[in-house]
Image (cartoon, rainbow, N blue to C red; front, side, top):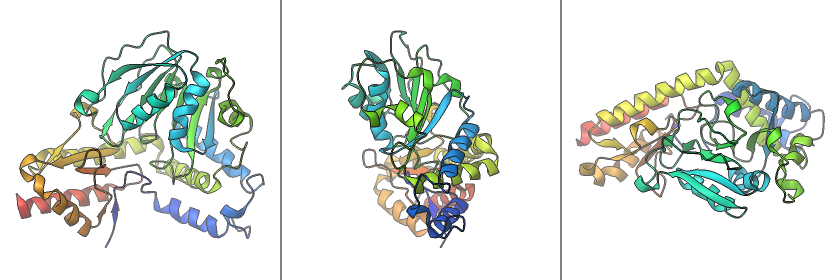
Length: 356
């Protein structure tokens, strides 16, 4: 039976990315050595790192004064590295879910944090609007897509100070105006590759402005200077990221990804809104294109476990909602084919026929 992978992450990757990476693990480009046993400081890996950085900048449309870093530690380490490098006195944060709250907690270790807006009042079911941003902040931090609650901001906000964005779960899913951001970062394991590497896109001029001493390993300037090879980088994950970037270019780039993502999300949201057994959990204007969250309608609540079991029997994987919210979550990242969304819709309609 064909499997349809709706996992929130690590998540589905394009078949050619998996095949090419698996081949490289066996033998990298016919050199007689595996990707995972070569030195990172050789003619074998250095071109891969350079190509990945080049492809990333090209796809996202980053100007020359931005640097691409591939680091360890996940987005969770960035929650501390961002304020360590950028906060002198005070920063603004927009609270839109669990990951934003974690970022706020870390930032408070380095200075004053002003929560500029929050959707906690409705269990993070919307992305705040009309946010007032003071001009005396060192930076503003946003989480553009909220995997647990299925909300997303669909535009690049105008910000009078440096804007920092955690785009872990919607990077390369839609076009962004990079020039509106001082920094974009995230874990790769949603749209870019497997777990194990973190991407950072950063404008050089925002660095070197804090008075504190920064440990060498936690200083972005260290990694810029050393080309992400100050220490041994996660070579396997970076190789897979580069294969994903090459696949995206072949597919037509970020614009094409956006077109496909909108089509997938529209199909599934339309079915959620039509089907009396299900209901969406996010405000319609804030609905995510990447993580589509829904629950059973109140009168069918007792059918939740039964639907999950039925869906799994039909090849649907990774549909269970996050433990904090329950229900269902269909993650429709770039590599998920529209056929999988259609198969899920068929599954929902079949379940409706049996139960409604």
